[in-house]
Length: 231
Ligand SMILES: O=C(O)CCC(=O)C(=O)O
Ligand SMILES: [Fe+2]
Image (cartoon, rainbow, N blue to C red; front, side):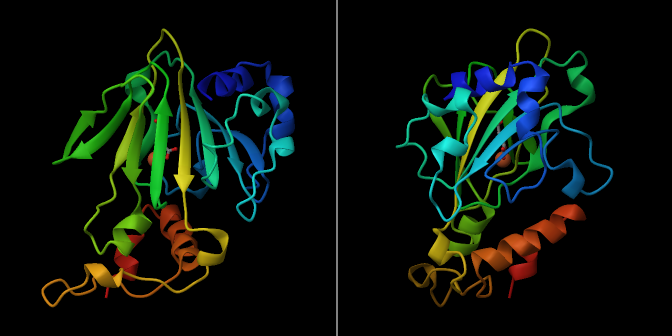
């Protein structure tokens, strides 16, 4: 997986231009510096390139993927609906920027497979803590929608990635798990089994689609999505 992401990004620029687009209705996009257009100002540009692929109606179309990435992708892994293959080029002045700025994922759960480079950090007690590299292991990040459904029993994690110092690029494969297509429009809220007299619902009923639409709006003004859904 990581090697196929490397192969894609390390091609000459011309070979990648076919995929270069920020039209996220496409199945595959290649772009630099994250969602820079959808962000609040002043947010620094991110020192990374991304190949992102999504499954329309939960069906992966392997023929739509860049040829270099097709065969090594294990279909068992692709049960999620969106996959980002990040490539953080070595940065000459890593202290002046970030690879990925501070955020929490709007997903239910995110699995991150890292290559052999450090850089991922989580915010814990107001301190940035390095996520240790464990060979072959996934990092599992709780997303904002999981926090809503679990009524704050599982809290989403704020994280960021430092820019890669000179030496070698950092590569990660990030897989976002969302409700399935038919469940994305269904009304849902904190799950009943987690509600008690002394633990009433914190969030109102919504749907994943409404949640994501609002996430796009607050993302542009630098806000957080969850407070909007609080009762
Ligand atoms: O590259 C990484 O390790 C994490 C990237 C990330 O947080 C994301 O794509 O949401
Ligand atoms: Fe993330």
